[in-house]
Length: 251
Image 1 (cartoon, rainbow, N blue to C red):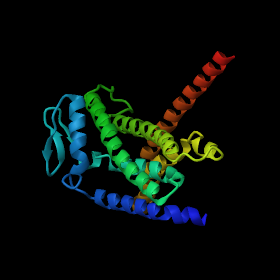
Image 2 (cartoon, one colour):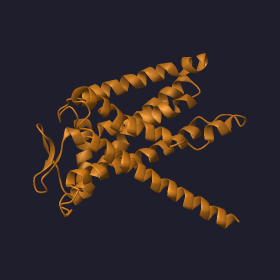
Image 3 (cartoon, rainbow, N blue to C red):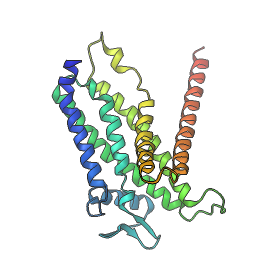
Image 4 (cartoon, one colour):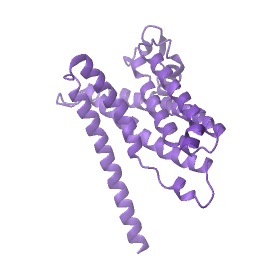
């Protein structure tokens, strides 16, 4: 335990410092402050939509023809923090030396940034396409549909990133044959699920309870949690079908 802390503690402290710094930058940030992530996201989303977003220092990136704004709140920074935490903290213990741990730190941050730009651009493009959809005036309003789409895209993307990072870390930090099974076994997506729900539901819920008594947060938390459970149900069902097909084929 002492050797583990001695080897990884500097990287853990550095990662926490990065998360705190990004969170402080994000809270109350203007579009100018977040242009490092808004600009590439706007270009990628515009490419997918076939439109161009113009920069506005006051609002973000705007397309007046389709009446759509990519504002600071749409930057995806929160997802980037979640992805970074899930990838870094879940696998850095596999690093055998200081330099490897810091290499994983830099790789985790870079991967979380690039992935956020890609995934958020896809989310925005899909939102643009569904913006004028006729929903029939029922419970499923455009705001709720926007939330559900965002949760699905971000949540599933996080699971894929987490599993991919597990394979990469196992390959980079492979141990001798005698200890290999402990590092190469499949990663449990429950850890990624924890990171997502903790940041997207848990932290905002605590803040809401402190500020408003929690009354205005119920619908949001129910929709987010139900959407995640629905996605997990589909994933587990597909895994079950895959195992059955594989079992029947081998037998």
